[in-house]
Length: 330
Image 1 (cartoon, rainbow, N blue to C red):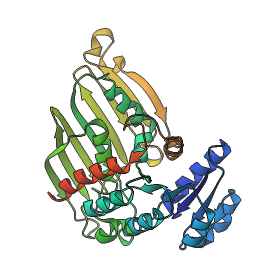
Image 2: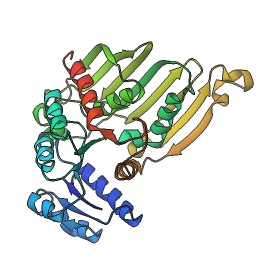
Image 3: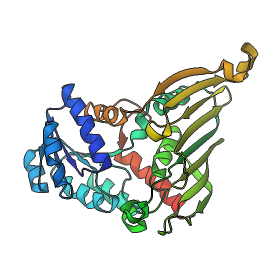
Image 4: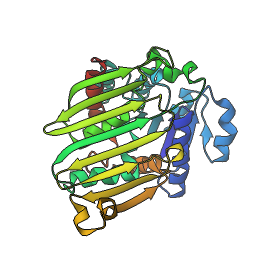
């Protein structure tokens, strides 16, 4: 199996590192990278055992079985549509277009024998994945509420980049990185409705929403979601509360700190010194392998269940429907 990566920015580099590991495992044979804006990186790619493609024609001539598109949001859609014309298996990094209309166009182009997936690597963070599996298995009982918080602080000068451009990015924090949280919501429930949303902006002043607070529900379960690019301390937290117990995931590796997942039972304090002492420390992870794990599952046809499998085009389209409903209320 040969794989091509189009785009060699932050996420493209992560994908290449994952491919190097998968080649060592014998999962893939080789890879090529194409990015006309990063030609200076060619020697580094070749030092890792990859090849460099100067143009899309070179990528096509490489005849990859999979193409990974890791370019900015405003170029990814057209690239994906073009690549689907000659490659049957494509992974497009999130989001699935900048709008529902772009997502619908991509979904239409992938119908038939094509396999189009969308990169939502949060599904493959160990703590998140285990917590989702626990919830699906009924470990917490009927779910009462799910709370999620994802806060970025950014860095000086980020307002000049494409991610803070409302046209190039398609929006603000709700689409990036917030789309990850909407995907996780849909990993736990398919029929999610928006109750209310509140947005804030005023620091970066580029026309994007910089912090959003969402209240959603599915049946009797409430989803409380916060996402921000003005949280000066990098923060990730996922809480799943049910009638029988709860799971709490904190951290996301790197500046967010190690990911930790703990589980607790209702009234666990009855058999321990206190509630905290009754909790089970399930795992600690630096979250270094999510991109690798996602690709391994993708290339092996994935595992069963939306919380384990790489996100399909059909699932990504539903995430974009939820995003559009939220965006229209901002």
